[in-house]
Image 1 (cartoon, helix red, strand yellow):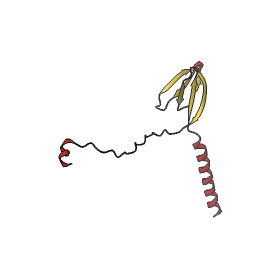
Image 2: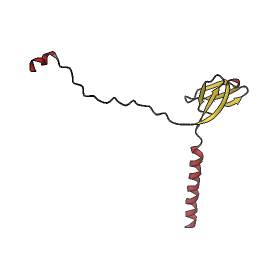
Image 3: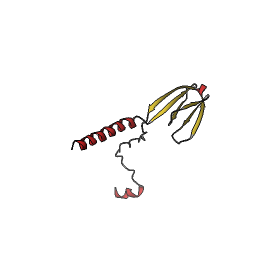
Image 4: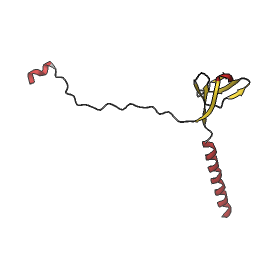
Length: 105
């Protein structure tokens, strides 16, 4: 019975560790350029020679010169929510009466 409890404890410990480590793995990287522009990449930019190589969210590969990159930092991934504009409040406005309803008045 003690062996069974030990296995359950090991399994729970490994699952907890995996959860902690895997939650921190998903990052995007914000690259600030020397002209003030900003680029978000889904992979960490890798320096190869005098260029940074990175991929964006559509898995396209890009190259940017090292001299143009001012700063690189990791940012948290936050799913974008579509902002819906609330419907304007309904106002009870009288409908205009048509000429053919004049004989009823």
